[in-house]
Image (tube, rainbow, N blue to C red; front, side, top):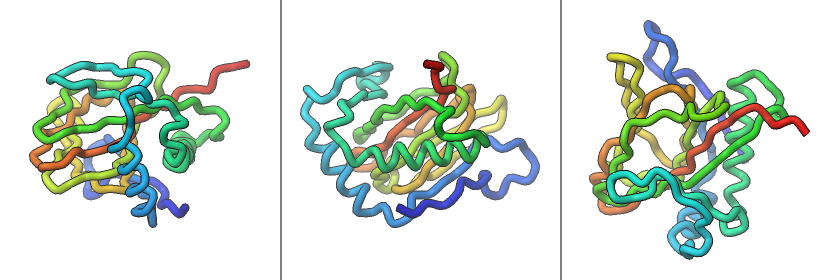
Amino acid sequence: MIFSRPTKNPENNVHPVLYQIGECQDCDALNATLRARIELLPQSDIVGQHHYLGGRYENLYVAFESIPEIRVILDLATTHAAYILNCPKKDLRMGWWLNIMRPGDITFAHTHDEDDEILSGVYYIDVPPDSGKLVLIDGMRREEVQPHAGMFIFFAPETLHEITRNESGRPRMSIGFNFGPAKSP
């Protein structure tokens, strides 16, 4: 699997960087497999749900065995995180979840700095046209990112962010994740 190293947000030479972008190149087949597995995911494979807002759970925690192909994306995300944080992968611990935004859904403004997180991010599996933008907020500054399938976006856990309404006719699928320091044995 080939990926490009994360880069700073484009066209920003004035303000501090709010996010970095990475790409999973040649991941169309993998994304199609992930999308198909998620669409057929039985309710019994969802082992946890959190953040019930706007009539849906924003975070779906899934039995890893249900989507074994997800390991490729999680490993790439960890590689990106180690690069951004300039630390060995073994020094990082990852938590992850699925986010399925159905037509009409939004994700309300929130942060990920609830525990010992040092980096947050998202990987986009399926992004139909008009299915929403990621909005990162820093005081009065708002930066909108139009995601696409195969894109990673990394940001500080304390960055307030939201996702605009899914105006498409299909679900938008992504994997959210947080990184913290690996726990000592």
